Picture 1 (cartoon, rainbow, N blue to C red):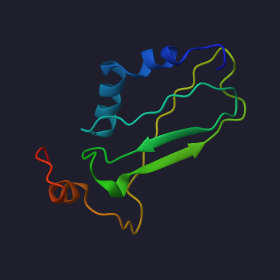
Picture 2 (cartoon, one colour):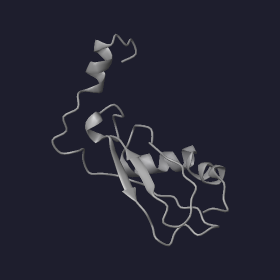
Picture 3 (cartoon, rainbow, N blue to C red):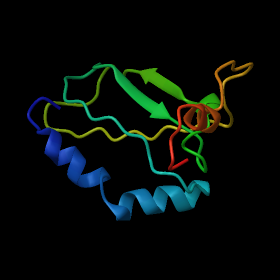
Picture 4 (cartoon, rainbow, N blue to C red):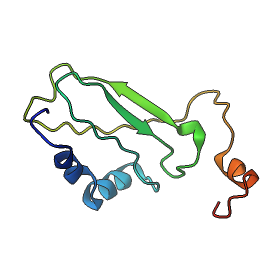
Length: 108
């Protein structure tokens, strides 16, 4: 909420205790995409998504958008997790790894 600081929520979620438990629960291997915002109730929340085992799989680059009309209160912290059962249907963007090779990246 508006009485809190960004660091309060970051201290809760940017830890191995949080991330490792979430990854284990969903069978994920990649890092967790995240976003931090500070705002009043009904502030827009946007959660970036990616493939749970391959952060370079572009078909799974999605964003969940939502708002909760009565949360967070001024003295609350809202933590939301996002997940999907698959990527975008009929995605047409290329393979990130092939693009990196074409650009001459050495750490592909």
